[in-house]
Length: 99
Image 1 (cartoon, rainbow, N blue to C red):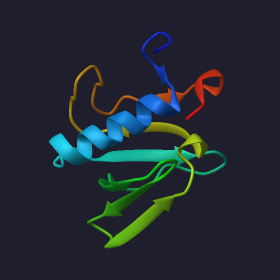
Image 2: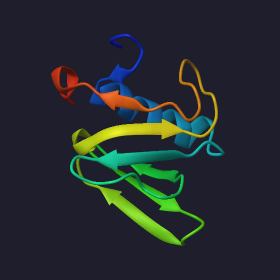
Image 3: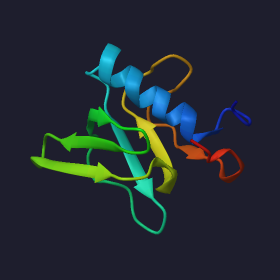
């Protein structure tokens, strides 16, 4: 459940990543881990596991492994999808970080 449409749970993020991978592989995501800066480029979703994900930076020919999605502090997508707006910074709620 979203709190004022800016924060989502880890479960909702996981569901979003799976839907992007399966239904809209043309939409990419960019994220910021706790204590780190934003990834420079938008990344294509390659794999979503029980707790993590694998994303590909096609511009830099680099793959990023996120072992635990709850370490993501914020994310954005590059195209509108369902209720998510492009280039809008969504956060993971600390109260909703269960998987």
